[in-house]
Image 1 (cartoon, helix red, strand yellow):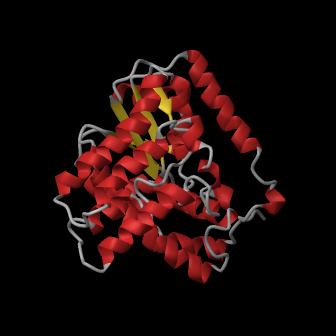
Image 2 (spheres, one colour):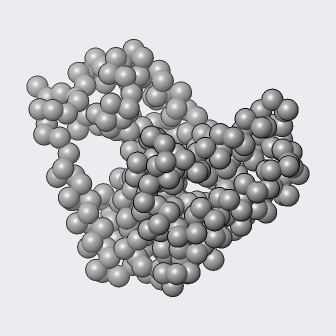
Length: 305
């Protein structure tokens, strides 16, 4: 079973890459960010709380928070930010609740585990849900996209050592602009620029570690935009898949075009003055340079005239 995780900084092209692998046809594509493997209160945090970071205060609380996440928040039984996931169980993971109950049965009388002892039932959950999705669709594997996979690849590789990780990379300055336009960062540059600088510096530090791992694949969003066919065929080769068909490549290109046409009109978009751009460049210079982007500030992000 081929298992592929997509991750990267938000607004770096993870969604279009999932779309591309869906159109490729060999992998079952989970159509939303499942989040629960790698984000707050999910599998990764639970694994640490019950093993390497165990304490008598933290472990029982971690179990309760995990149960609430998986049984109530993900499923929509309680209001949550997981609104896109509420149809996940019946539509894509028909055995989801069974898988959760089977996993949680391990925590009825236990709060501390050896690492591998806990990973075994966690793998079983993935087999009942993700692997089953691929088997029912008669696919050779599956692909899941959650940007935060980037930060928890060590855990994902503990679960499945032969899994693939596709890391999407984009010019940090354009990621910053996009996050501002989505209101995912404060509009006050004195606050948002230092915050994002910390994120970008953490990104490049994590990337250095990931580059040493097997089955690690990097894709620059700019390569998808400028050399779509070659980039997709390279991705298929690196994943051990058959080449993309011409029809699939055209479909990905059309999806990217449709997305770009849906962006805000120029008068509603954020653009930086020369002074702002110069300061942002200075603050992000380390990550921009390490990711091999030009020093010149992207003109598309600057006010004209």
